[in-house]
Image (cartoon, rainbow, N blue to C red; front, side):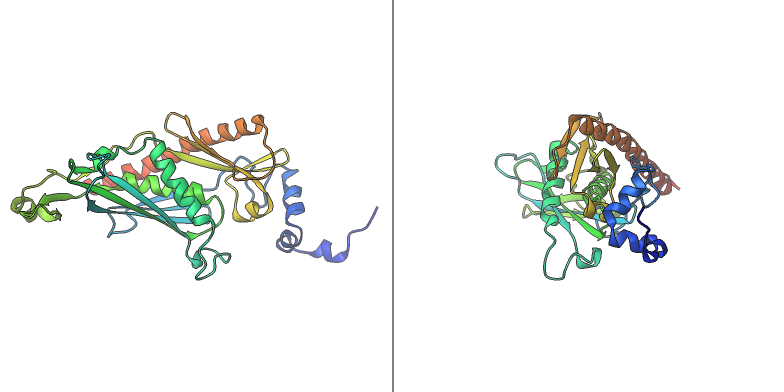
Length: 300
């Protein structure tokens, strides 16, 4: 048998992972473990912090392992479209500043950013999570335009999953402000108890949106017979094939995204869907725990 060189014998795991990343990963997978000590089907620890931006109408900071996302929503009054006079609208933008990854260079926007922006908006609308009629102020005259901005603070894989969690959490935290109509027909926001008494209000109290069919996603990297849930950036750089499953509150499939890679069997897709169902339930618990904790803080 061929002897290993002293260099390889003495090389640190970190060095080996850089020199032979795929072989390093496969060596771990033979033991049903990943380089970061997770099992193949195990997602990274996830935290949600609501009200992360005090100047926003709704916001959330999400950490998925070392991936960090900040979502903020600002509401502006707009004239509704003629096709939907009693509905508001949303505008979604995903940002990847250079600070989030060494792969993103100043002045050169990340190619993935507009793709994630579009996918986020598509999922938020197609899932039925939002009722745009709740964003209407005066039918045919005024409605809310919700600007959702999601900022990637640190990119370490599964960016869409983390972005969707932060977006859902921000809309869950969103509070519709009080508004009134001036003599000139202009709609403006009203603040404080003094404003309530002074102006005739369109909406009598601040309120939350009715959030239903909440979508959550799970991305899986696929390598040979292995399904790796919630891949890190390093795993994504090694494995060409991935699939993202988006499910709603009833575990109905909202979307299956497979950007490329090898042909995937239905057996593997079904395994990904099963993992996504477990993940959706855990993410819902995390979000609801944060919502309940905030409500307790506000009543104290």
